[in-house]
Every structure is written in C-alpha cells, then in structure tokens.
Length: 181
Ligand SMILES: Nc1ncnc2c1ncn2[C@@H]1O[C@H](COP(=O)(O)OP(=O)(O)OP(=O)(O)O)[C@@H](O)[C@H]1O
Ligand SMILES: Nc1nc2c(c(=O)[nH]1)N=C(CO)CN2
Image (cartoon, rainbow, N blue to C red; front, top):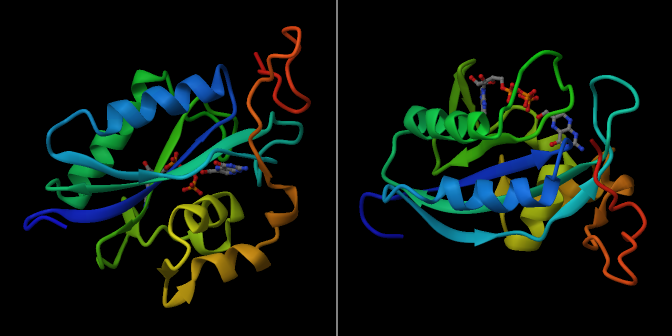
C-alpha cells in the first residue's frame, strides 16, 4: 500500500434492472476519482435475497478492494453518490435495489457510529459478502476470524451460485440469469 492510502473492502449488490451492467459501471465509477484506486475485484455471485420483502429478484453480489486517501465518511459519501447515479431509492428496509454499496472494512478502523459502522455490522454473517471476498482474498480475516470459514457457516451460503453470465446459445439466457424488470 502506498503511504497515505488506506485499503478498504466494498460490497456491491444489485437485484433490479441490468444487474451485471450496473455492477460493471459501479466498479468503474467507484475508482474514477484519483483518490480511489482499484486493487482487485471478486467474481460475481448470484444470491437469494436475505431479509426484506418476499419474492424479491435474486441479487448479483461482488466485493472489490480499493486503496484510498479519502476519509471513511468521504468514502461513504462517494459510495452513496455512485448509488444515486444508478437511481438507488430507499423505500423498504432490505428492499430491492438497483445498486447497494457498503463499506465492509476500512483499514483497521473500528467505529460504532450508526452513520458509518466499521466493520459493517452484518458482514460477518452474510455469505453474499463473505464468499466473494474469500474468492478475492482467500486468507482475509474479519473480526479476527477467517472470512472463508465465516462464509462456510453463514445461513445464506447454500443459496449462492457463481454467476454464469447470460448465456449466448441461440440467444437464450442461461438458467437463473434472466434479467428482472
Ligand atoms: N459500513 C457501512 N457501509 C454503508 N453504509 C453504512 C455502514 N454503516 C452504517 N451505514 C449507514 O447505513 C445507512 C443505510 O444504508 P443502506 O440503505 O445501504 O442499508 P441496507 O443496505 O438496506 O442494509 P444493510 O445496512 O443491512 O446493508 C446508510 O445511509 C449509512 O449511513
Ligand atoms: N442476497 C442479498 N441479500 C441482501 C443484500 C444483498 O446484497 N444480497 N443486501 C441487503 C442489504 O444490504 C439485504 N439482503
């Protein structure tokens, strides 16, 4: 890591609209400012919605590692700005969304501020965060525990699939990869 830069892990999710395009453009927007540099991205996984209203479309989830000279609150504002570029609305808690960007960890910062709680208070029980993170960084730790081991015991782990794209056999989308309106 370069002096003055702090490494952070961001978790991205989308379950409305063109989910994969949204993640692609969000990654680009998140590292667009010179203050944020890309270190790596995880594979994209397809996940069942955890919490919120019944019958939501499946999510695409991924994590990315960045290094930044922004403060944690500046990075949160930047994440919210990128969500807004994708017309993110907040109507129902854990409801469907075009784009969600959460800060999972920020260096070794620990904060219990409700505006920005770090590490993210629910990340350690969410396979939709832990599993892609473990694919990007197999030896990562969260709260002193192996991210891969936390993923393995998370309740939503059995519902996670590696995203297999949209398929291009005779233009027919692959099973489970059909875009939701
Ligand atoms: N680590 C964090 N990352 C992102 N937002 C956070 C974090 N800690 C606290 N927040 C606050 O949570 C608020 C609600 O965020 P958001 O609407 O994205 O919640 P959510 O994604 O529906 O649910 P969850 O917080 O369980 O992921 C944000 O406005 C932000 O101030
Ligand atoms: N599968 C999945 N479920 C969720 C997600 C998400 O990104 N993926 N985000 C939530 C709130 O951040 C609540 N539930």
